[in-house]
Length: 128
Image (tube, rainbow, N blue to C red; front, side):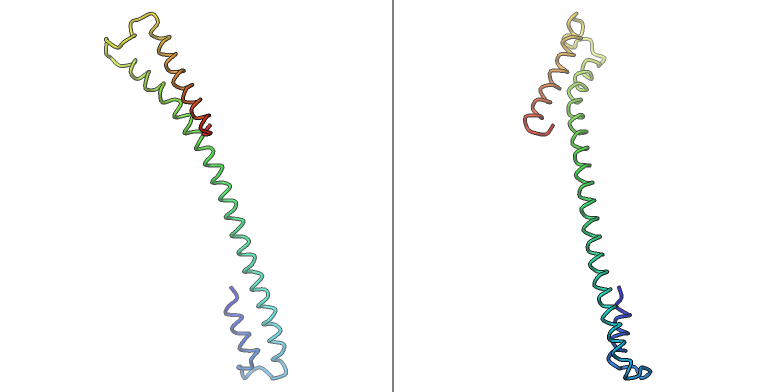
């Protein structure tokens, strides 16, 4: 911001200061014009910098959203497995299939079946 300098040179260019000779007033006006152009150029550069920073932050936010989407999908796919193993890991003796020879195979089939069907659903929706 060159506002104080611009105001000062404007006053000098108008001849408001008694220390300025009348023959020097056009030179102060010329300096004022140059300083005004510099101020406008600085303002344009500031706006361009703000736009570039905004675009960078937007692209960074988009990349972060993609990463968060992948993390959410992986977490959602792990949820059925966590639930099923939590049920089979309880200290109760009468859990269905717990003492069966095929209990572990059925549990793993259920885990992979649930995760696979969720992955298929997410893929169909365009989330994954």
